[in-house]
Amino acid sequence: MNIGSYTFLVARPSGGLGWWPRIGIGALFVGVLWWAARGAQVSFGELGKGLPWIGDFMGRMLPPNWAFLDKLIVPAIETVQIAVWGTLLAVILAVPVCFFAARNLTPNVVVYQLTRQLFNFTRGVNEIILALIFVAAVGLGPFPGVLALAVHGAGMLGKFFAESIEEIDQGPIEALRSTGAGAIQTIVFAVLPQVVTAWIAVVLYRFETNLRQATVLGMVGAGGIGFELVGSMKLFQYQDTATCIAVIIAMVMVADYVSTRLRAWIQKGAR
Image (cartoon, rainbow, N blue to C red; front, side):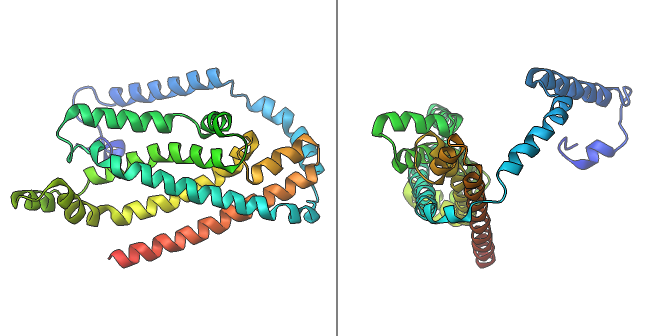
């Protein structure tokens, strides 16, 4: 029986224990939720009390100061540039290493585990922490943001690339190996044709994510429109803040539309 299937969840239980195992799992699940709520201090009552303050803050942001748009053109372009280069460097860092993190291509367990843990480490450190480290290393500006997105993105992309390799059909790989093909030939002619479409789709999605993250990294001195956003909030220019938020939302919407169209075009061409 497939535990992950919907049938398992709704089918009548078999065996002498009946429903008790599922009741126990459900009780454990509820207990974990309660434990997490206690630790996170989840309180919808406090949220309800704070709603008037949220309304007051939102009211101060309206109407947006559209005259502030002139100052946001260059930072908005800079944010896109940070996302582009952060994504590009992440791909450059992830691709050569991801093959060692695929179990079906790496017979050496030590190499496999070390590569996996490397990806876990790089994606386990938040982009803001990485940006702070790189700001201290190379100074303020967009370049620390690029480096932060590249390092974190390499871990995320590397993990996905390796897992997509592990899911491919082994037939072409075994056929090439039986003819005496080397590792590079096997990767080029048997692995890449099966994963390149999925890789491109996830790279486009990662670009969307980087675009959103680039706006946040500006808050710690890594350039982009986030720098203007935090500056307007510190000066209590909330109408300028609203304009920054509107521009960020517009940028994300455009990036989502473009990447969605590109993914659809790529997947259609792959059929």
